[in-house]
Each structure stands twice: as C-alpha cells, then as structure tokens.
Amino acid sequence: MEVKNNNSIKYPVQTLEKALDVVSILKEGPFDGVRLKDLSDKLGLGKSTVHRILNTLLAYGYVEQSADSRKYRLGWKFFEVGSVVPRQRNLNNLDLKVLWELCDKYEETVNLGIRIYNKVAIIAKVDPQRVLFKAGPYLGEHEPLHATALGKVLISDLDQEELEKIFANVSFEKYTKNTVENLEQLKEQLEQVRQAGYAVDDEELSTGLSCIAMPVYNFNDEIIAALSVSGPSFRMDLDKIMNCREGLKGSCEQLSNFFGSSNGR
Image 1: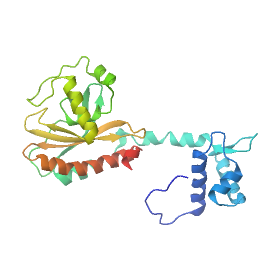
Image 2 (image 1 turned 120 degrees about the vertical axis):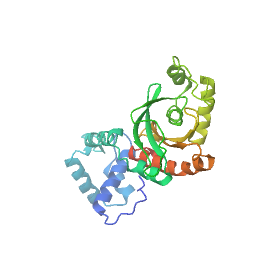
Image 3 (image 1 turned 120 degrees about the horizontal axis):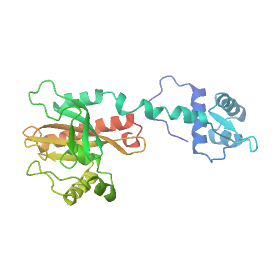
Image 4 (image 1 turned 90 degrees about the vertical axis):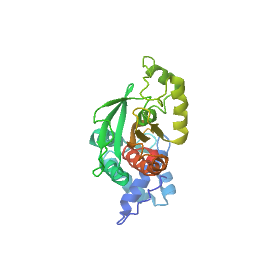
C-alpha cells in the first residue's frame, strides 16, 4: 500500500482515506484485477465496507469490475484525470516564488534555462534588488551548452551518441582561457557533473562571471531544466559557490516536486 506523505492531516476524512487505500491496492495489484475478499483482507476492513467504497468508485468511473471474474481494477477516469496533471504543471505556469527566494537569500542573479537543441534558452530570470552588478544573460537569450553551468547540467544525463549528435556541427568557441575546447574535454566535465550533482562555470563564458547550476527533473525523472545562481567572480568565490549549492539544491527539489519527480521528494 502506498505510504502517505509527511504532511500531517489536520481533519482526516476516514472514508476518503479508506477509498484512497483501495485505489492504492488496485494500482499495485495484478492487471486483471483484485477480488473483494483480497481487498478486505489487505485493508483489515469488512467486505460490506469495502463493497460500498467500490460501488461509489464504480459509479464515478474510477473503478471497473470484470463481468467474468468479478475482480476490480482502476477505471479510465483515473487516466483522464491524471493526464491533466502535466498540463497544469509545466514551465509555462511555473510560480517564480522559488527563484525570488533563492535570489533574496544570496543576493545574486538566478536563471532558469532549458535546452533547445544545442543552445541554452533562458526562460526565467530574477535579479537582486540591492546589488549594482547584475549578471547576464538577458531573458530569452541563448547561450552555448559547452561554456555554461546551465548547459552542462542540461546535457549531463545524455548518452555518448546523443552528445555526439548534438555537437556534430558545433564549433567549440573559446570565449575565455577556461572554456573547454573539444567534446572529449566536455565529456570529462560532464562526468564530474553527474558525480557531483551540479555544474560550475568558472569564468568559462565571460571573464569575471561565475555560476553554479543544478538540474530540475520532471515526473519521468528526466532533466527538463536547470537552475543557476550567478554573479561576479569576486563575490562568487569557492566558499560562496558551495554555500549557494545548499540553497540551490533545495530550490531544485521544490521545482522538481512541482513537476512530479521523485528527485524532488
């Protein structure tokens, strides 16, 4: 049976809790369904109580019963409802509160980026209010994958074939002395990103600008975006980058949770 989350229920509705327990068992049960007696035994409830719950779920289309075996299984109504969740929780209706809180905490620029083939597109950006220096890029601007922390995070879960396809016709432009020069060097950095769980841009795109980024996952635990904290290198030294890492991790977990990922729980 599915475990409830850690949030305490202030005013629990026992009948609803029992119905959700029934749903959890049906979700985990055999594909051909579960018998009433088995449901009753697993829940420790009388068959009449379980039968009333099932009848209600049947009436609303959330459960169906086989005419031959009389076993119960989940109905298509759950699929209809569940398919709405990804549409309600997407990058277009994301609450930027998480980004503002991260920005206020460290007083540095916070960027949310996605990958559009071989570029990073900045889709959300929050600048600190009390700091004169505001780190680029501009909202909607595209940046190279190989020279940014956001970019390296966004491709960190790709296999060798995908990476070679993306960079087949990409020139590794050297923006600063710290920029990687070829795919082999990038692959070495990506392995470090996978092991560490974050990427750092140490003045690789722009001299005097440093950044740390982490991944945001969706309900399939795929990286769909990356979140970063960036600022001038004289402020974003190693100590501050490691300090930002803790807050950034929590923010990415919140965003991943919004998109239904187990990485955010």
